[in-house]
Length: 435
Image 1 (cartoon, rainbow, N blue to C red):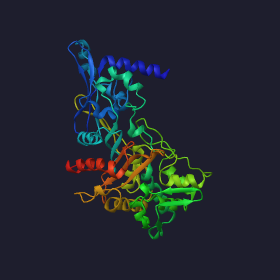
Image 2 (spheres, rainbow, N blue to C red):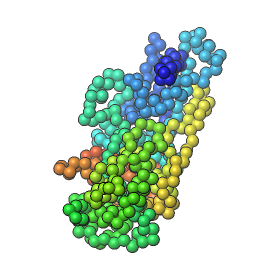
Image 3 (tube, helix red, strand yellow):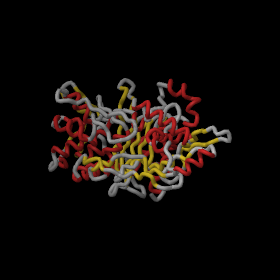
Image 4 (cartoon, one colour):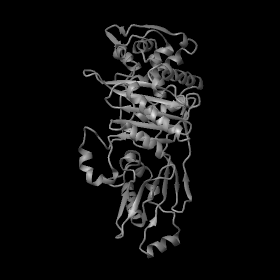
């Protein structure tokens, strides 16, 4: 009953009011309604595919910000007198406009950096939760959604309508070692830096053997070096020492198997480790394999919390609503969601993630005009073929973080080879723009 009356009201508003414009944070038009001489309205997206998933479309249903901000866009702030005048002249009232948190330059850079790969990029301001860029590929042109509808809805191989940034669910691979490292630090706050392990390239426990990526033998490794070199054998060894109950609790605190504080459609990240899980499940979980799955957005949120002294800010994409005359109707505010870890724990993780760049698998981010920190991942998803998704998640500057960047490229290989260079282009664009 409510839906019917609500939909009827929306239909009435759409006949009286012209849908408002969606802008980038810098005032670039991302979506607008163009009215032809005969009065026919067309929704126009000047950047074609670039903002396809996050801005969305408003025909064939509504997605993205077109859906999220629909109530504001179809309402007007015109006075009663102005509405009467417009009605008499056969004109629609101007709808309210949305200014987003999205930065055109960063979105362009991320979009172009992704190229022809399948995957996603999320860029988030760590101390506010603002989403500065969100890219998902394969994509589509929202200007042509009516014409290509049958094609894109039937393309199950590429799923171009799926926002992989928030709805794509993937094994986290070695990026999950962030979570394992956090648990080990929690359980061993005074001794974790004295950890030592001799890596021979594999770790065997009972009938279960874990191998390091591409058969690497890391030799004698500390906890820091185990993390920097992403040593699977060492982390399997670490995993066997963890308290399963506390580990599960930590993962839940980081919002695995939980609802996320986001306002766009998303998939829930999940773990399947339980009290009854065997050692093999534990070993697979601690290195980010097995049945653990995560979305790029969720991983970016965890990364942002690490960069922000353990505090997670609620991600948001809507900055403010303005009337057609520029009067602010609603201002959206940064909002703290909660504390995911202590300041000391987050500082330890930042130190570990800095080592990954300085002497580990993300070394392509070293020696730049800014310092970065992060974690790579090569998440196996086809054991027979040895296929891997390439991950990177990190933040910069390392010592006083401003933004977090998470990248996944599907089925391409190692995170250090493929995801890190893409993240570098995003970081470069951010610092070169003088943000």
